[in-house]
Image 1 (cartoon, rainbow, N blue to C red):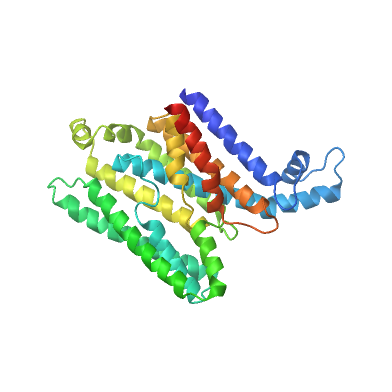
Image 2 (tube, one colour):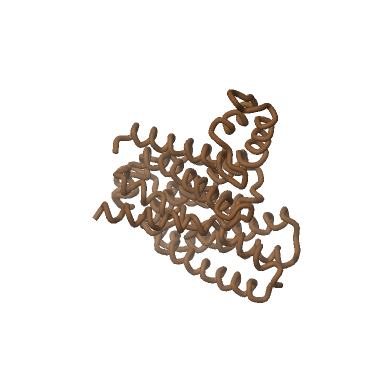
Length: 335
């Protein structure tokens, strides 16, 4: 697929997903009502009262949540692309670093102690930072033995997997001993919940900044895919590139977890789907994956809050229910 077509198509899908998110919910709106609510103007057969109600629904409820979902999905997709390039492993995703496990452990511990939502987020951030520090420490120690400062990607992968397993065991222990009244909230956090997403516009700005930074590294990421030795022979500072990619992916993952909890599957599936469409160069793969990941999570979150409205479901359920068949169809066409 040619780059301009891919970029226009992904951008169009992203805009369409946002419109769908604004239209559907416990109180469905028509396209005319959505536009009237967005621009604070009634038209045609829409009364001023209906336009005012639509305005409140769109601006106070649905638009912030839609932006939160898009930012979260885009950050997860960005982290997935970066980690797959860093590890040269198509099975890598945004939670391979153990960041999600550390954040989950911190958040569930805070929920068990009855902390407020702000303190729960603070505890999740602390757990994520501990996980990043541990993975970085073990990986740096392994890379130091090489004599040239280049990381051992297998050490990075193993450190992330081992820490994730440990965090998962401790998280399961908390779920077992926690009071029954708190378990439901914990499960929502573990499966992803955008109901209490805060500062979505800050997350959107962070997404733009991180994507721009990743695009600046696109050519070097393409070369890194040829192997460490080849990249070094072509003049790439592999050690510095590995560190930038690691911390960029870690920051994107932390921001996504802080925004929507431990939402899975997005960071693994979205880059795969884009590659199966024939897009492999990172200067196109990065923005298309970000747009596709954001649109995918917006649609999944719309389903989560609409299917059983007014009851809301964890968005992680729908990322799998929507993503798995789509991924299987793409794989079937590829083979």
